[in-house]
Amino acid sequence: MTSRPSAAVYRRRRIVALGIIIVVFALMIALVWALVARGGSDPAPAPTASSATPTPSTPPASPDPSTEATPAPGATPEPTSTPDAGPVPCTASEVQVTAVTDQDTYSADENPKLSISLKNSSTKDCTMNVGTTTQVFTITSGTDTWWRSTDCQETPSDAIQTIKAGATITSSTPVVWDRTRSSVDTCDATDRQRAPGGGAAYRLTVSIGGFQSTNPLQFLLN
Image 1 (cartoon, helix red, strand yellow):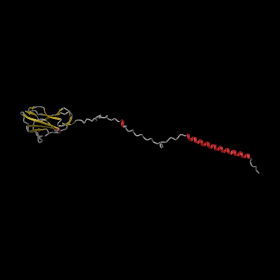
Image 2 (spheres, one colour):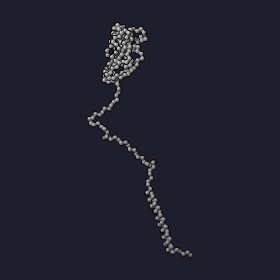
Image 3 (cartoon, helix red, strand yellow):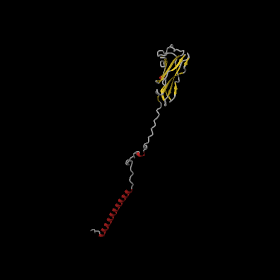
Image 4 (cartoon, one colour):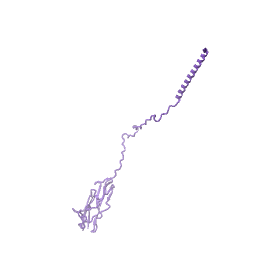
């Protein structure tokens, strides 16, 4: 028959078991504290590009009304400059039209050379068409119209020109009268009626751009 352990043996066994329990419990507490300490010391993870919150853009500042320039009371604002529009078309009241001949008296073998003089009597430049399309030379004797430049005119042309204020211009190429009677029906004829000479008086009137010469110009044919 086996003998039972003594009371001293039981006490030693309880002490060993209790010591093991205490050691295990202490290890568990140490492990928990280690985890807590490590979790508190780790830095927070930086936000990624997908999780970062964009910063709203700042709207442009509105102008401060108090800083804007305002005219002083009673002051007149400076006028806005307007670009020069350039010369305007001439009017009949601005341009004086004068008939011109190269001589006052012509011998039997001389043909009169006729021109137009234009004077801008205004204080501003103006423009007008001085081409042959707008020119009319008319020669009369008494009430009889002998010759008109437009009856047999060939290849008329336009020429826009600026006439300076106060300036006078004269047609550069004169029109020659062959001393015959003109007609739209006799432009190609070689036997048109010739104007009488012997001191006969004739008058020249001109118009250009619809502006008529002020006075007829008299000349003599010998």
